[in-house]
Image (cartoon, rainbow, N blue to C red; front, side, top):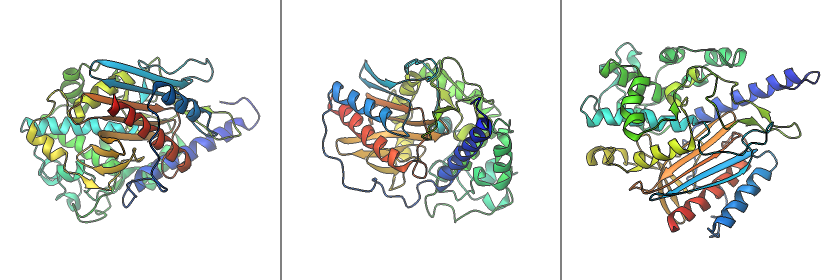
Length: 400
């Protein structure tokens, strides 16, 4: 925090804006959003290592852009890391593939992984309803299925937009919520639309997914992550915290609002308020290993469940939108770029924006992390630029 007179109040006001923008962006989601950013498609660009590095360097020099960026690309067993700027403006330390970062809504892919692995084991069914598995939730929600929750077609109201939730969060960003009671903030509301009738990105969906998984196994969601995701994929630097502290070392996240200097907000919010919808913290190295399996590698899902996962809704974009034309499946998105198609998820959170994608066979993958937040409502011009750079990295990945 700044030591200047009035610095603390300005800092708190900026954080409140970040919090409000986060929940607004996630609540608005991508319903009705164009599958490609406005404007003409970008022309083909060089995919050499030098050209990619220049783009990252330019991104961190952009006014209001991230202090740092790191992109990890893997083709087969060969991994290449591109980085620019800094992970910590105080020390000047560069971004690293083994430093932790907040995955934001990429966490939804992990709750999806838990659920679909349970479907493969016949512990859950995609047509299981809230009424069957979580009968204590509002009766008006009982016909919603697991499939609709995973595909954001449930109609569940988003708890993160509830005035009572926002009041607590803005008054105390580090407040420790009971993550399993987050849906209580909207328990008095009906569905926003008939289940399955349209797409609307909602944080409530993945909270319900995690609660369903707990209900059928009798095990905490955190334990299920360990058994069904971390251990099979050898993820040793992936955690789901409840508090606001980050494991060390970590990529610091910043509020970048010129002309003020970047403000470190890495540990400004508690992860308990997003839990299964956005709380996971991991290194780019671990995230890369996860997305390779999640997109199609290592026989992580059966062929039948994979087919269900990849029933895409055209134009249903992740938040923020990923590169190219977006389409939504079950806790996974398809990104059709000018050079080919990849699968994965994006996320944004105060201080962070993420992309994790891989090819359908899991043999080529890309994670792309910057340490400031951008979305279609927060710095949309920056998001357009980020998406263009991401698409060039995807093109380089697919050409190798």
